[in-house]
Image 1: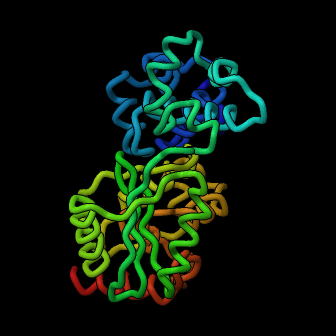
Image 2: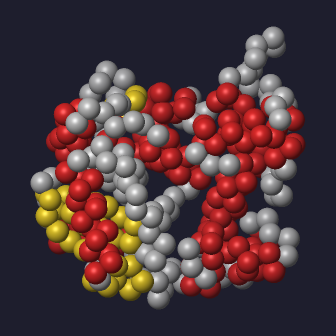
Image 3: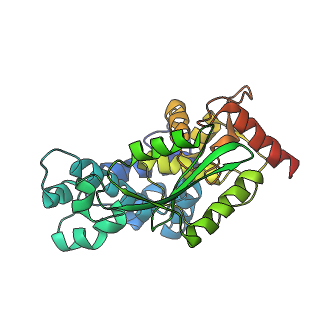
Length: 286
């Protein structure tokens, strides 16, 4: 498809439109298109296009293609009775060796374990209190997978058990306690950049939204429509809002920095009052 397909004749496409076209091209392809091909369709050099693509999406075209392939693989493995290799070929892998070399990195675990619902995976967690109420922090060996705020720590734990029903939940060790202390620091001073490893689990679209959220500077806000435009999907405002609501990593992925077009503080998973307090703390620090 030409990069001009979504623009009017005689009008130069915007950067967001060029990247959106490339994303659709990658999503439709069984074998990811080469960077040189995508760049040529956008009328750029490969280096220029890679820099533009990463600026808009937070990923390189190769990483985006890998994330999309991982999403197809997860969907295929969740089909009843599916064979692991059949799922691999359905996801676009053309050899078993390539699949097994990449599968654990894409899934976060062995394919057979993923198909069994993550049975045997280990997640460390800690419950505590902070100035915004109850706090739950959970993480895998790859990084933090949950930072949740609430009123009742036991309710947060039940939610964690429901979300990961077949994993092994274990208490925090000394290393994880240091991670928790850093999370508490980010809650108390939400302008601090998250330097902790994150195990971000979501669809490709959600990950694009979450990456864009991390690019919003502390002390600033963005409308949902602006966020949708920033990822090259201006008509997907509702989907962007849903991705913000699905964010599992409070503060580390700062969805509190997105507001309605009238400035109202709506749509925060952990309560509007907490959203207002986080924004007030950021404003006070800038």
